[in-house]
Amino acid sequence: MSGPKHLRQSLQDEGEASNGVSVFLGTHQNRFDAKGRVSIPASFRAALRAQAQPDESLVILRPSHLHPCIEAWPSAAFATLAGPVESLDIFSDDHDDLAASLYADAYPIDADKEGRIILPDVLKRHANLVDEISFMGLGRVFQIWEPEAGARRREEARARARRMTSRPVTQGEVAS
Image (cartoon, rainbow, N blue to C red; front, side, top):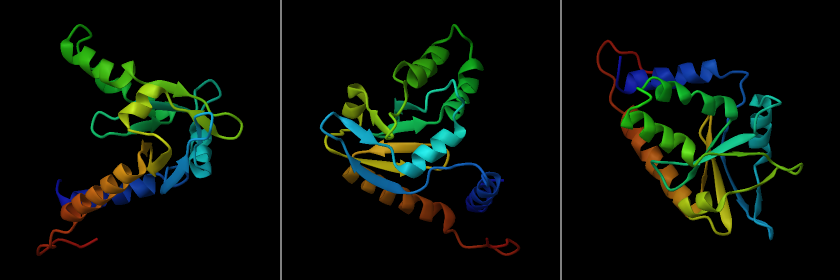
C-alpha cells in the first residue's frame, strides 16, 4: 500500500503505537547564555530522561545530512541506526560512507542539573547558530535550528504534507 491513504494510516498507527512513550512535540526557542550553554526545553528533557538508560548519554547530536540543522537522538533511538550500517559489507565503500555519515560527527551529550548543554562548535557552524536557537520536535527525535531557517523548514514541510495528504478520495476508498 502506498500514497496518501497509506501515509494517513501510518501516521495514525504511529500515534497509537506511541501511546505511553515520550515523544518530542512542539517548537521551542531559547538563547545561548554568556557561557555558550543552552537549555533543552523541559518537555524534551523529560522525554529524553524517560528513554535514557543509566549508562547512556542523555542525547546524541549529529549534523543532519539533509538540512542545515542538528539532529538530536535519544541514545536508544540512535542505536537503531546501526542496523542499516551492519547490513552492508564491512569492507565496502557504502558501509564506510554510511558509517562516517552517521557516526564520525556524532556527539554524546549530557545536560547539567539545570538542563543546559554546550553544543560542539562544528555543529553550531553546520546549523548557523549564533545567539538564538529553535528546538523542533519530530516525534521520536528533535532538531535544533537557527530560528528563521527552522520556520522556513516548518512551512516547507507543511506544504509538502498538504500535497501528500490532500488527494481526493476515490470511489470505494474511506476518508480518514
